[in-house]
Image (tube, helix red, strand yellow):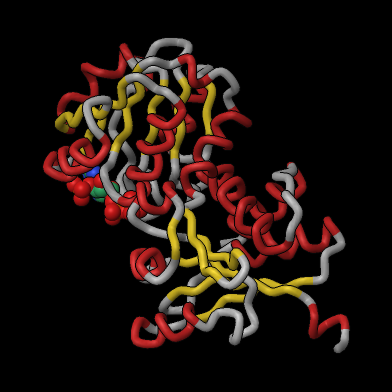
Length: 280
Ligand code: ATR
């Protein structure tokens, strides 16, 4: 067997073919660590997904990232850990012996990025999370797991915030979108998980001046890198954590599971992905 044939490979499975920075990230780490391996994008339609995933190794892969629209099916077809179960979606698959296991790395991506950008952020007793979609579910779980006492959850459609609160219990306080301004003075952490501020979307209409001076502001949006929310927070001198940081940090665990070494999120890697993002 040639060295090439033995090289490990992972992939990103989505449909249609995802435009993703994951190959750039994983190739950077493979190179940096001198590991012979690969990472490709595999476009797999819903009707072929179960066969592909259940025979991932036959297709030549030691594991995979999963994206739209397959994350819920991936959970059902594998043995999920507590995090994947909590989020209700799996984004990372790997083999534990013959067993296909899954996790959701958005939680640690979010938390580890906060730890890197704003150490001490978890001194906040109250957090305010905007949005109640899949990304919010990962964020809320991560905050509760870390010990944040109260997570106020504001969503345009309050029923979705209530549904998430029912899932996670009394520490999550579902509030209406109109309640945001009243809550800002009491929160130590503000997180945007909505699509507001994303390229082509309206900006989030919110006055960061109402936040306490020790507050930390996180935005999951990374196109543009510097959202209007992050710009306003930085202009006020608040600590911030951006969406690109979360994207890089969420990729760490998959790489470690597939290739056996824990990679680092370096400023070189950030520059590389940032350049790719800004070239459009
Ligand atoms: P994801 O899985 O990435 O979190 P999602 O499930 O589509 O994506 O959720 C998008 C979030 O952005 C939702 O919280 C959505 O609010 P609704 O539940 O009311 O739809 C929020 N969102 C999108 N556009 C918005 C807008 N113009 N104003 C306020 N919230 C908005």
